[in-house]
Amino acid sequence: MVEFCARLEEAQTLADIFEVVKAAVMKSTGQSRAGLMLGMANLGNHPQGFFGGFFTVGTNVIVMNKIPLHRIKETRPELYKPYAFHVLLHEYIHSLGYLDEGMVRSRVLQITRDSFGIEHLATQIASRPLDFMKHLVYPDAAWRPDDTRIELERDFDRSSVSYIG
Image 1: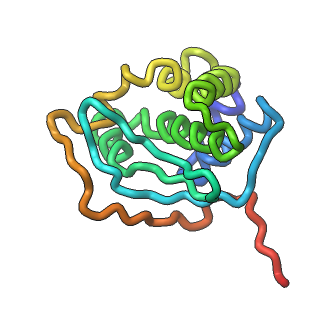
Image 2: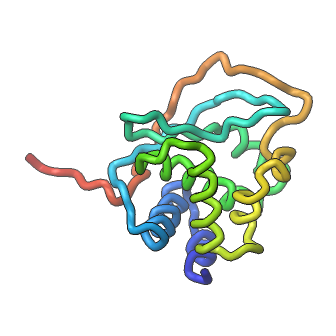
């Protein structure tokens, strides 16, 4: 547990956090997948709903909603890394072929608990996400974005290999 806590604390970028995600999944399940990309998009805001990210089957792109990341920086910056870990882990599990949301949530909680222990903020987010909603969405403001363009992050999945043909 100490190893994963330290690695997440030391992470500086979403790519660094994703490396912690992949290591936690490998240790817990023995599974991995390389070649993923991260897209950032404005997916809107709804006070009673939540859309942190998604993975579309048949692609290699995880998309994260920029809005909760901005909101966390305003309300509780210490949640940024645990929250990003949570969303990236959830979508990474989907990318491994697990499609049932209930099962994915259960696996995310188990992997997070095993990696960080029950007191860590990442585990608290995984076990009680509604408790953190006020820090993830803007209250009293619902909107759909005019521009849903996805911006790809550079050098996201470090296990991807470039081949020279």
